[in-house]
Length: 187
Length: 187
Ligand SMILES: [Zn+2]
Ligand SMILES: [Zn+2]
Image 1 (cartoon, rainbow over the protein chains, first blue to last red):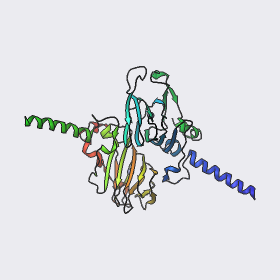
Image 2: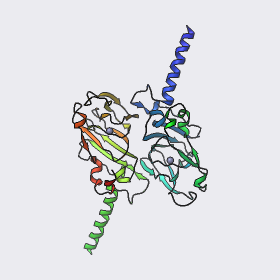
Image 3: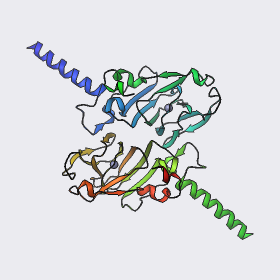
Image 4: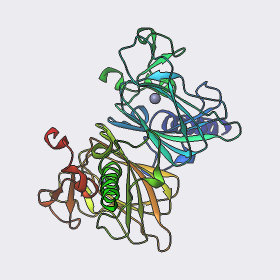
């Protein structure tokens, strides 16, 4: 009898884990964002939730993330050939951005103060970094990208040549589920 | 002298109106959302702001709106061949949706309760309507679409044949500025 219960529990756990981690099969159409998977994906100070995305929700043209950066935490210095729009829900920080140029490396970025209820978009392929430069408060942003899943080129610093930037694909939050889907062949 | 001042004021007003209504030329990269144009575009109970869009900001792949629906107000019954993601920031309401079928008209929609901090996406071409069915509170949503500017097919009711749905293009908030841009030929 105990064994039966165990099997039922295990099957239920497996089905639930499948649904909540790597696909929305079995989840309702209208979902509570606070019940969606939320993780740091190995990046200290980050909390990431894919609200609607390519790998989890089979979106083909747009993807939306909710991200929270603890004071001092930040995105990598990076670029991508998709459009990206930020909406700042809470907190303050700094956007570092180098407009694309014919230079071989990004060079010193421009700095922009970002604040609650502000918005900005990143021009395609511009190298950028978002940083919670505040000391006390979390920075919370909604991020919208086109052409998911995102293909990111990462820089160690602002003087790294564009040609040396490393492609990170699948990106942190897509990694775990990317292999389990059949979308691999579609790129 | 007074005449000179008037000319300067007029030129300044014109330049400012241009920038804030139909293009972001001259506006900072990081923008305060509460300072962006906010209008009902002739639809009672609606407040619409294009946070980042095709016509105003030259986005080519994604567009983000902030919309507030007063109690009782709603979108038309409509469909579009782009992806659409909603994030509910405040308030409650009802999503009406008919999955695409081989039927000649949408038919009775399914009803979904939408609530604060919920999210949902509309499958491409599914006929849908978002309605603030609450009695007291505003419903505020962030809306993300692909393939801007949006091309919307509108239905008078759920039994109108798909072939009779009327194309509304440019859509309400794109109308005023669409003619003033050069993007007309790009469709
Ligand atoms: Zn980015
Ligand atoms: Zn819609």
